[in-house]
Amino acid sequence: MRHKTILAQGGTVHYWIIRNENVSDCIVFTHGATADHTMFEKQIPYFSGNYTIILWDVPMHGLSRPY
Image: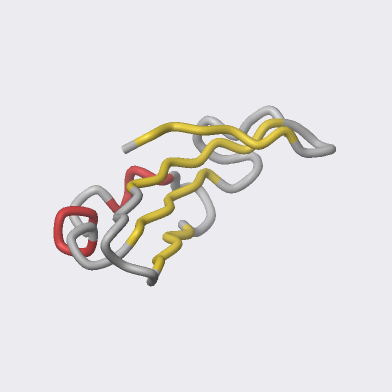
């Protein structure tokens, strides 16, 4: 899993990607309020074989703070 960032107007958004070169489909996991990307840890092994996976910390959650 590769950690990356995007600099936005309000701050830095952190995201993680597992790129699967063998497929064209992608799943983006988005958490709810008071959570962060780690809530999807158990789902990653199941889906990463068939999809490119993107997880992110929405602004003001996890590593995407301050925003």
